[in-house]
Image (cartoon, rainbow, N blue to C red; front, top):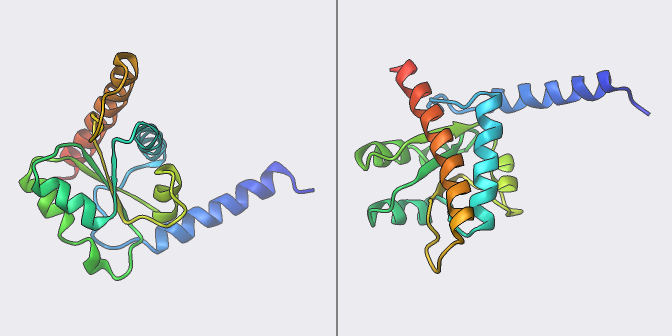
Amino acid sequence: MGSDGEADKTSQKEREKKLLALAPIAKPLAGKKLCKRTFKLVRRAAEHKCLKRGVKEVVKSIRRGNKGLCVIAGNISPIDVITHLPILCEEADIPYIYVPAKEDLANAGATKRPTCCVLVQTKPTKGELAQEEQEKLKADYDQVVSDVSELAASMF
């Protein structure tokens, strides 16, 4: 059996590998704390069906005028697949953030297939949410969006 130190070293190595695979345009990149909060928000949105997964679905949703938070994976190859997303988001006044790994994003979004990007919305596309669930989702969303806006403002 390994000790906690060994487990910590392997997770550190995995983190370093993810950071090495990052695309050069992956800015603003979420830190460890913001990443955790973002994945929690994505998980909650997936449970309530307030999530659009994949480049095609996200682009279509943005073009239709839907608002939300765009979460983009930073380790996409070829990078051309996602280069247009930040521009689309900026034109539509949608906050966006990069996370280190597409596998983690897919895991949070409740899919087995690695996902390039997701659009977190506060309302489900079909049906309604209970009032308290809607408020919880909105509170998480607002907190993450304010952190993202702060990070983006500090960069530019």
